[in-house]
Image (cartoon, rainbow, N blue to C red; front, side, top):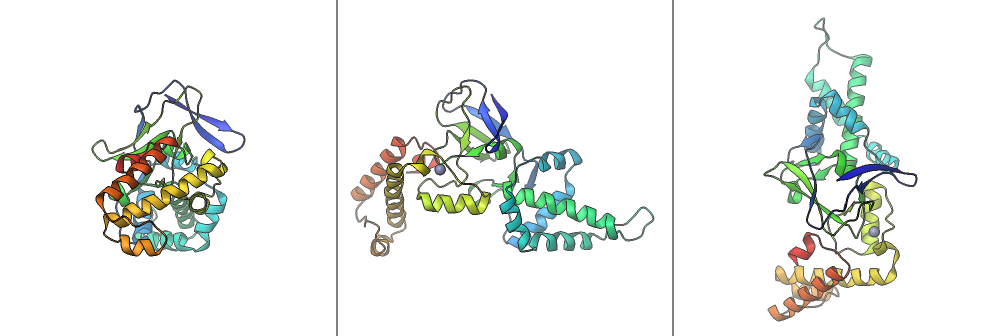
Length: 279
Ligand SMILES: [Zn+2]
């Protein structure tokens, strides 16, 4: 249904090979590497080293082909946490040579460096499995190659029954069109908020319609306000939110009106992901 193409400007991208109608499952992928649900960053890196150490050569070659922004890679390496964790991990494993002596020197360094590299590829490309990473997180070769748009035509989610990441078309997609997903996973964000997330996490600048058209940006701003007002209403904090410039929703009728306005704004901009469903 889809194919990888090389674009001079941004590298790899995924395109539809045939016409894909709305609601079609474009892909159901298994992860190349998976890290179980974790409680702290330190624990994540440890589990990640374990996962990276356990994958096959074929899997690690596939991972090494995935795109990583050099800016994000540098930012991750700067703290030295990954290097530190990978060294601790291999020291605790006490690996031995064939002659029974403790593995050290160049051989050990080669092994640690390979794991550090795989950990970084994971950190740049991983996607949470289920809400808040309930089922852990993983890296998926097709999904990773799909580019971001704030007005996506596809939606990804982890299916715990299939144990696969599914990608569905949320609009009719014509053969030859590029497939886009929303990396941020939160539609009600202003252009600045989205730009900051995209640049810091993936090192990218988005040039979609919503990021280049001021009128569309104003609609998004209204959506952010409505979304925050509804969230405050839902947890009974309308009074406090009102003080921060968010409209106060006092009655179910007012909340319903706000939700209906938000639904209209989402539909008008063809934002048909889970946020529309939830609203
Ligand atoms: Zn955008």
